[in-house]
Image (cartoon, rainbow, N blue to C red; front, side, top):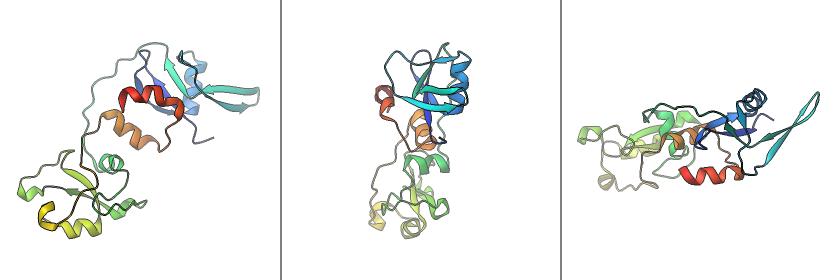
Length: 174
């Protein structure tokens, strides 16, 4: 029951965020959110008064203005974007302490700390690369660093599960 997530949409059907089922039930019972017009799958939640049907997707009944938020490359955001995988050797790391952030173009050579110059590396690969360019150390990146949208960052950090019933809305964004 803990892993039940609900996709929350604004009244304009743009994706806002992923919320847990408890928050979704409260929004729906207070009349602040409804199921969208599309037919979506539902969770069955057992309660003392009987079963409760909760859609996988909820839409707010009133439009909420969302202020622009700068998409900042933090350690956790870089790791999430790269799916906790060393971009040099390709090994997935569950232990966060074994991962480091590497500057593809070293700072001492004019590299910056932007989304497109930061990548995830394991300690071993980061030590091997050291203060060299990719050409000098003869290493290659599995995936070129890119700047994700704020929504992509949210999705990579929020959950590892993307429900099939979210697909119509995700196609617009990701």
